[in-house]
Amino acid sequence: MEIHILDTDLVKVGILETFDSFIWTEKFDEFGDFELRTIPRSDITAMLQIDRILTLPGTPKGMFIESVEFKADPKLGDEFIIKGRSLESILDRRTSRNQTIVDGNMQDAMFNTTDGLIYRNVVNSYYSKRNISNFVTVTSSDPIITAITLEAQYRYEPLYEEIVTPICKDNGIGFRIEINDSNEFEFEFTAGTDRSRDQSDNPLVLFSQKMGNLVKSSYFRSMRYAKNDTIVLGQLAPEEEKWAPGTLVIPTYPDDLAGLGKREMNSDGSHIDRYDHSTSLLISSYDYNAMQEKVGEKDLLKNKEIIIFEGTADTTVGPQYREDFFLGDTVEFQDKFGNSGKALIKEVTISYDQTGYSVFPMLEQTE
Image (cartoon, rainbow, N blue to C red):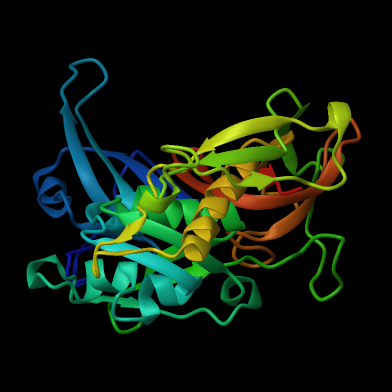
């Protein structure tokens, strides 16, 4: 097994073939991570410098080295431990430096316009030292991605934690930053392929304990924290102060819920500014209400009925990763208790050690 080491210009500076263990985890809507354990030989420590990038043959994925640790033990032997996160963590190095109001197509709001949040803060900032010269974006043509719209306001939020990751989790999509054939960091929003029983275009991918390829699983269902009705409290325009100082209420009332079926909550929308800082003008009530309603919708999504299936699959039996299924795909699961349904390939852990090579997909129920 070879691990290739690149510098930040994506030029190969070495190949590592000697190590004790290597755990590499790829994730669908977050950054992945790795841990490498090897001997602290001088040629190895010289290659494995912080901010260099590890890649595996046959995949465009990469991981930044972010920490190195040396351990000396006369009984167990000396050890060199290297850890880091995947290329998706590039977005964790940038924040949105200006107020940005978005209303429309999500990809336009992110990078297809000169004021796009990723474009303006990573690719072509007003302050050139913030630019990453070999970072490019790809517009997805997947109808799941192209249908997503945003009505929101962003002010100085971290790109990764407060913008891109929430967009992905709210819409059931993922994102990737990979090394393309032109030696660039390539960003794209992604939606996996449906390989469940609900479709006929792709072969079924099934993980079950009966088939021997579902190693362990847990299933949990709860309505304890479920809410289905919210009032959003926000800022008011000056002319509205006589009505209700400091609040603006936007109720969301599902028509088919009543009595014990109605579960109410309040949402905080006070972070949405009533003024457009670029013009110093008041945002229209229509546009402001639309942004507030999005706040309420997100809160309701976070406070819905909880149905959780989590499982660890074994690819030594049945479907193979990067052949029969990929990160972000929807597959079928069935546990030993009769619980079944669709599950997302949320993450995949690849492990190498003295016992050999293994791949363990992590499944998470999608409905």
